[in-house]
Amino acid sequence: MGNLLKVLTREIENYPHFFLDFENAQPTEGEREIWNQISAVLQDSESILADLQAYKGAGPEIRDAIQNPNDIQLQERAWNAVCPLVVRLKRFYEFSIRLEKALQSLLESLTCPPYTPTQHLEREQALAKEFAEILHFTLRFDELKMRNPAIQNDFSYYRRTISRNRINNMHLDIENEVNNEMANRMSLFYAEATPMLKTLSNATMHFVSENKTLPIENTTDCLSTMTSVCKVMLETPEYRSRFTSEETLMFCMRVMVGVIILYDHVHPVGAFCKTSKIDMKGCIKVLKEQAPDSVEGLLNALRFTTKHLNDESTSKQIRAMLQ
Image 1: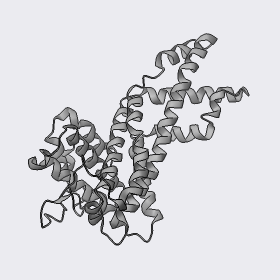
Image 2: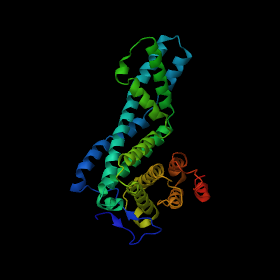
Image 3: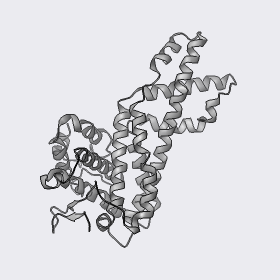
Image 4: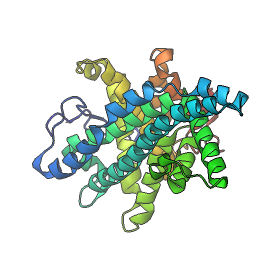
């Protein structure tokens, strides 16, 4: 199985345990076509994150324009500051659509018969790595977005200004770039606290609903197995020592949390109930053993973006661990 090694010959508490080499997995000939498609999308992910991290917003210009509504110069200054930012926000949104399609292609490859999801992850390590990279990007994007209120402020100002100009029968050049329909879709996207996670959750649920002949267990087992892969690598010093970069540990933690959230949204009773194939106590324990400042965002993602945490079926112990 190449660098994907079965850690145990038996299952412990029915949870599969694997080590997956996230640093070095390479596509086989059978994986290459899908791998190339996904790789073409992922090659833009770092520039998207860098662009988002550098996003400063037009807060001062907008504030001056609002406080001085009759000052045409200040209105133009604010508008000229906001327009390029809106074009940048459109780029982020359009990337989410590409990522959604990429995820669905990966799910199709990693869940299709005749192999089980576990066998797929063993056989198709490079696709599993790309799946992990999508989740890693998603949590990093959402962490940056949540810390930047300027995004929604800028876009709200843009929409108000466009609406006012439309009432006055004025057409602005940027409407060719971001028309009303696009602005509506972008508004829904940025209204979410974690827009990329929401996009992937919706994409996963859509994949399940559209593939009615494919048992939902194929998808949820793929997700729960990936969770176990990450958990084992994080809690086992022997495997942690294989990684050449500390960032790989953070990578594993983000992927684990991302997969849990997807599972919780797709599985009928979620990730937190006793019958879940995800060892939630073990996953939370692994996170809490890390430096607090490195995992607080991930713990918050479990607290606030999961669907079933507050269900009656969730044990008091798990809720207490996440308090």
